[in-house]
Amino acid sequence: MKKHAIYVVIIALICFAGSMAQAADIMVKDAKITSAVTKLDKNGQTYVRIIIEQEKTLSGITYTDGTPVMAFGNFATEAARQLKAGDTINAICSSREYKGSTYLTVKKWLK
Image (cartoon, rainbow, N blue to C red; front, side):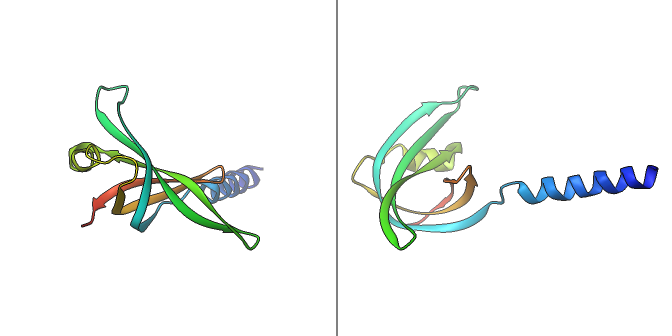
């Protein structure tokens, strides 16, 4: 009986770990900004939320979608504060998917 319970727990852990979102690094090149907003988090730290246009394809249909890019910490927010709609960005970002949507976080700004 104990062995069966252990197997059930192991299988549940494997299923749970497999369903968690995995982060991957991607390069964002010449992405057009549609909006950039500087805000404070719950701890009073500054962050910048940038929305970029990305071209996507679904069932052979190509369309443009807005993707949020978050800039946290001094190194990322210093450059991000200067950005505005119409500008373009180049950065290495971590990419996460949650409920079918992609979210990016700046890891390094590129020139």
